[in-house]
Image (cartoon, rainbow, N blue to C red):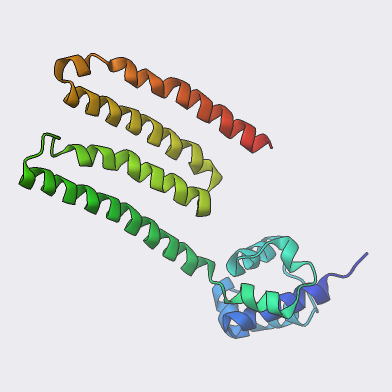
Length: 203
């Protein structure tokens, strides 16, 4: 049976050094003693499975990564990445993106009021809702969780269909509001999206 202690100890040591932590600082984060960290990094003992998973999450790697021989360059690159900081940065980017969409919509509202357009001044705010969900769907595809994909996409579908119905209703007056069948377009789109997600998960 292959002894994983030398591999795990080397990987843990290089990841810690790349993060710029001492054994004492790492011990404080995981409520272990300096001696425990030292034993792990000298191959005298291995962390239990739960602790090993916590360490993997902390360094932004997988258990498989920790238990296989990796180059020092790879270890240094992974060690420098701080998953917590990355999550904060991604959250900031998401908030900035949604804020930008609503800022543009607000400017469009002001423009409609100032120039007295025939387009209802509040319609940009209506369209900002599905556009925001479309942006969130793109962000989730890049960085988010798979479980959030379907709810966000369904929100986009139904807010888009609703916005289209309001747009038609305002453009064509009483006749436009009678075209409520537009809302039914959301039904096949929803079914198609649910089936697509199921096929995607199975694959």
